[in-house]
Amino acid sequence: MCLSKKDIDIPYIRVKEKTNKAKYEFLRRFYTIWNQITKTRSRVIIDTHAGSGLVELEKNRNLYNKNERQLIYGSPLIAILKTLKISKNLKIILNEGNNTRYSLLKECINEFKEQGIPIFKKIDDELYFKSLETKRKKKLKKKPDYKFPETPNAKCPSGYQEIRENTNAEIIIYNEKIENIIDQILHDHLGDSLEELKPIALFLVDPCGVVGWNDVIKKICNRSNKNQGTEVILNWSWDAINRNLNNDSKNKVLSTIYGIEEDTICKEFNGFTQMNEFLDKYIAQLKKYFKYVIHVGVEKDRLLKPKRSDYKKYVLILCTNNQSALSLGGYNVRMIKKKMRDGHLDIEKFAKSVSTQ
Ligand SMILES: C[S@@+](CC[C@H](N)C(=O)[O-])C[C@H]1O[C@@H](n2cnc3c(N)ncnc32)[C@H](O)[C@@H]1O
Image (cartoon, rainbow, N blue to C red; front, top):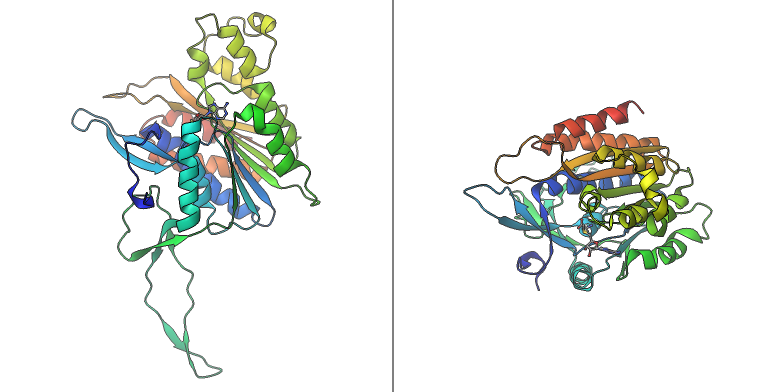
């Protein structure tokens, strides 16, 4: 299958415009600058719930233009693309638990490894100058200008040519439930390093549902140990909690998410009904391991006229011990604000929380 002619009828993960504008825009910006800042050290990106590689974006649904769909790069490919030019000393670890999505992801990564990933390079007129020393004509060296598309089907902008480039990053893919492989990942890629400085690690935990505190999150948090060098971007799903609040599975789900004994859940969550109560408790747990924990809520996409509502689908949480990663997170969110149609209120709150840390 040709990279640039991927078929939309393949069962890729589906996302909506808000997710593209919030989560993916955040990742595009954060990965790029994080990679520039950390390039002098060995570093590892760990995408614990990597998905299908490409994702199907449902665009601006409205009365006249229903279900317009487009394939865009999901988190694993954003990681590869946004580190493409500085990919020495970098490992990208991708784990996906679902077999079908894992196969799609693997197929995509293999194609990129074989053919390179398409990017656009500016076509420059060649300029020459006469050297004062040798009096010979010399070519003027200019920094190349690249554009990194968000989709494999992107059209080459005028004045640019499509080229294919390969990453120097080592890409390792696992097909496991993350709870069964996290110990091995931490041990093999982040723990017993012979280097004096352990690699810097950026975790993306994007489960779209429940992820166990004791099985996964606490293990990642333990790695941070209040030192710089571990960052976590976590997609905290309010939906996953909310849909269980009125049924028998409530205590079990909360026990898994918060790592709290099932028989103490009633006491611990006594009177909790609002998202912010649950979120604050979760953030308090993360703050035991990270100096800075900041978040931004992403509202549900609404069909037709979106109503202003406090109802959130998920919350992106950034955990870091590093002041510059914190500023970087805040800066990115301020930029994303421009792209979000609504949800300004939350972004505003987020930016404020960053500036007052
Ligand atoms: C929200 S999607 C990930 C999307 C991807 N990060 C992206 O942005 O392109 C969540 C993925 O986690 C996978 N998943 C669910 N439970 C898992 C588990 N316990 N371990 C590993 N993967 C899991 C699902 O199959 C799904 O593909």
